[in-house]
Image (cartoon, rainbow, N blue to C red; front, side, top):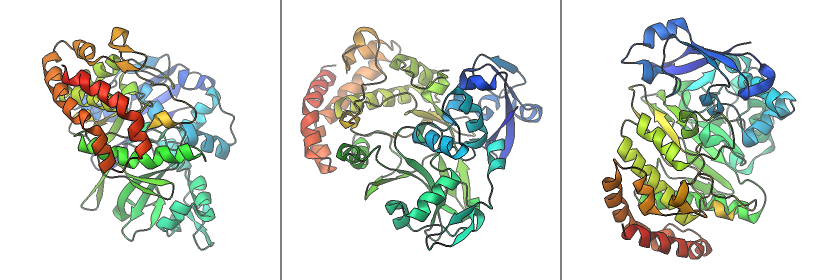
Length: 435
């Protein structure tokens, strides 16, 4: 009847809070009780640590018992969604719907990104589960030697079965939700690849997210293939980018920014989507940009810098056709020190090409945006305390946008994409240079 939430803090996993649903069948939209464990609250509820030690920006560590009409929004960052949800439903033999939320929380959240997990999901993992090696030998999961990179890229039969048994398709959280198949993998010091959570921390060399195309159509591959080049463009524009992505035979290898190996020890950073920090506890929400910017101004340690970064990202999303700009594709990193900042850019791709047709998700309200085209002079007026700073900074950014087609070519983006985006680039660079 309870889910015990654990946090990685002080170099170890420790129990922090308990969720008790009053109506399991209603799933995440059902009423519940949420409270920090007495021992955790007693250690961290002081004014200097409460916010930093909280599981969410909205829930600092304290002694309060929260009676909620729905699950805490940060849990939606953990529960498997999209492709991962379908994989878990198949593995657990569940029908999709609200009644599946509770078992998914208790089973599919052992290795979520960020620094949170559900203890019951960890306990449900069986290290003796039998899985195949690359050579066809059947061994216990805990003894698996890992796979070569070619096995991951080619999705060998043994690797696919291994991934299914371990549940690494079932990622939750912002950067690994969605329709496309995505895998959470770790690489050991010998170069072998393993499921997230399989290795002891001391044996991990690096952490990766591996994405596959959403479908088998050429357009699906084109979108993902150009994502690596899009991220290079973002870096050239001065946006916050973690590391280079690598596209190999329909697989995109992405170094993770919520993990860092230092002197043989793993640092796990807290991650919270802007939707969660805004209190939005539903999937598929369409929140206006100003609501999400309000979250940044409220919680970020460097609010003006992060506000500017957010608006620049939206400019680039518009001119380069990344329509899938919802509030789970932007997250806050939360550090043990209490620092809160926008995480590096991710899921930045030419989504206007998606065969299913994706309309721009988050938009500016009122006359600040018409038919998917923002008016930047009106956008900056939304923020009276930052208008002067934004006006100068975005005017300067306009010069970078004006030269974007050449940068896109230098980063090897497909020429037809560049030609298609030229009109939008010209229109919005003119706007910005006129500020």
